[in-house]
Length: 135
Image (cartoon, rainbow, N blue to C red; front, side, top):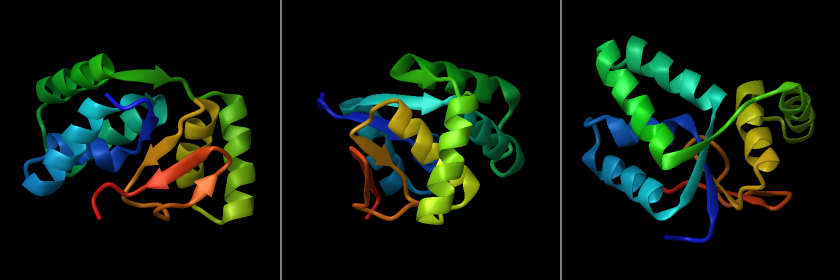
């Protein structure tokens, strides 16, 4: 297992649980298996929303997935400080608010990596490096 602590963006979890792209599924599962991973309440909420609205998974399957995720990853609770930090990040780096909330959460957790398909690959914010594992 890697010593890097990795914060997972929603897309990593979606690929891990979707069979639409087996290459990306393998990459996502490998990332979860090889890093100390953290997800936030925000990420789990987005994951559930995508599973319900886009993937049309039954609730039992989503609940089982959440249990597996929480077994593999630590959970970070988004709070008022994270929200305020996200606003500062949004203003400084011009990411969307929700992407800034992901970055703020990774920073609060002191993650060395933020695994995301949606953010600028290799960008370093404080001590956290954004990594697109799918390219």
